[in-house]
Image: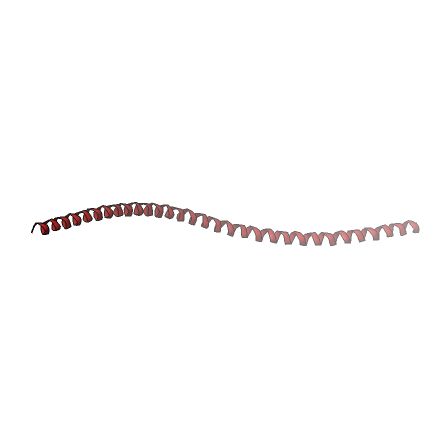
Length: 114
């Protein structure tokens, strides 16, 4: 029986050692899981913050694009109107030049007649 007791004691010691090793491994995995949970929570918070920032940027872009379209329309209308003014100015200038030429011709004719 002593031999069996010694074998049993040897098995028991080996079992205890393996169980202690498993406990150590479990603690390490528990710590790793805790760290990963912290990382996950931090990343989820960062995602929420970035999502809100993205929403703000998207809203701002929509607003700025609307303003840009309005400005484009105003600018196009201003350029069109300015071109019309330039055309009118050219026409007026040509009319004035002809009138001045006619006046100069009439003045020359009057001087020639006298």
